[in-house]
Length: 350
Image 1 (spheres, rainbow, N blue to C red):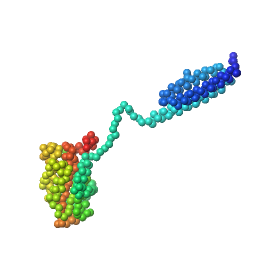
Image 2 (cartoon, rainbow, N blue to C red):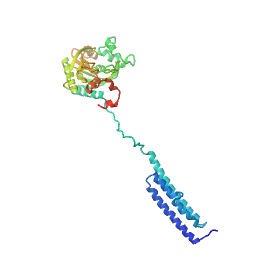
Image 3 (cartoon, helix red, strand yellow):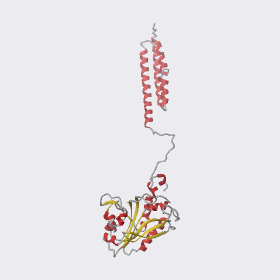
């Protein structure tokens, strides 16, 4: 038999609704202060769980009559929905932060940021050009794809001459090839400018050379050309000797060996005492104690005539050096192939 205590029931209803509203306020503050997802889970159990605080309040519904319970039940559902919404929103915010945050494995040691640096051959090229700039030379460039005319004919190398066989290289067409030396830029500069001329020409050249300790099929070269009235072989030797002293130091020895190049006469190979072995002999210098750094000589009259210069009026000298070999001398590198391996453990030393 149901007992209806109207006045007492009204008081209990007011009391329960007040408790529910207080529970909502306390729960809202607790959810706002929760520092992580685990704390939110604990609050959900504390407030809305089977043995939680909301359930504890609702146990008193048995003290109410049938017409009084719906009012308390509706308020309880409102409070439950409000707290559930707050808990879900905060949990979703923590989930997004976890998904978009930095994925860092803190168990791994830190890694320094990788940076590249200038290749040792490039360092040498820049230094060579700087030294010759101080000697009055300008830095110019030319195309790597050359015609047979500039690569051979204008340099006094007939196509049927054995010297052309020495430079037989990588042809792109019957008339165009990858240049075998930077000397074609000599002809191009002389065609465009009148004497006096003093230029250095760095660039890549291509030859069918074996890839060994001191040769490569593609390598950097620095060409030099000086043309004016009254230039002699003594001027040429003085200029090259000054360069060697500036680059290698006052103790470096230089020697000029007679040689042959179609575009110079007389011609010479220029050697520097091997900086790797100190002149004692090693694989890099082929156990001679000397390292060849350039071929050079006085510009051949035929080269002047091909460029439109009067060989009776003008003289000059030209040289071509391999900065790769010079880098070997400068840094004590025993094998030129190390310069082509792109190994940062090696290149990082320079």
